[in-house]
Length: 214
Image (cartoon, rainbow, N blue to C red; front, side, top):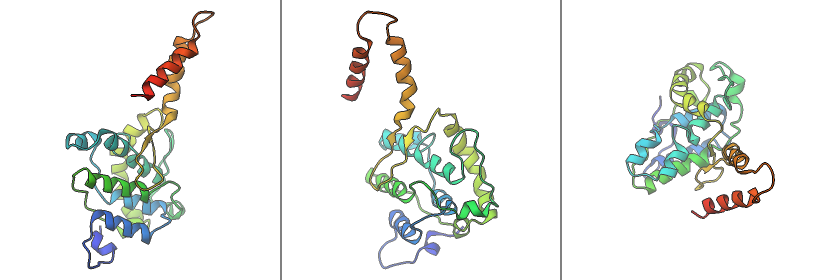
């Protein structure tokens, strides 16, 4: 694995994790699936509870990190996994690894590193692997076990992606409204009278408005 200094040209200014990532985004403006894996593998990602205990905002930590934040899901997507039942792409599937990554990559990663620093914590050091970014089958084979062990179980057990991957820099992950469709329907079905009585929709609207105002 190459250090970030081997992958990014040095300058007279200090190289921080965020500036290093920005250099990578300039180097690979339209990242492939292999480059997405390399980017997501380039720094350690603690689980949300660990970062919350360290004093980071709960919504920020849970939106980005394990068990079901956007970073583990982004890595699964780079491996070709979108929903339960899907299979990972083979490390030897050269056409997949050369294909452009179809989801936001650099913006959410920059936001994550920036927000970690803004909340008073040391951003993780980046370790970029050019062989992995090039889709080397051996490096991909070494990457796959950690994806299965750490990312897949929690994400696959969720009924739907809990967070939407933010497309713009500075934008935090937002809760996926589709995850609330089933619970809302269940509430409506419970509140809906079989015949006559007080209009059920007034109760539902009241509940939604009170929740929104919190």
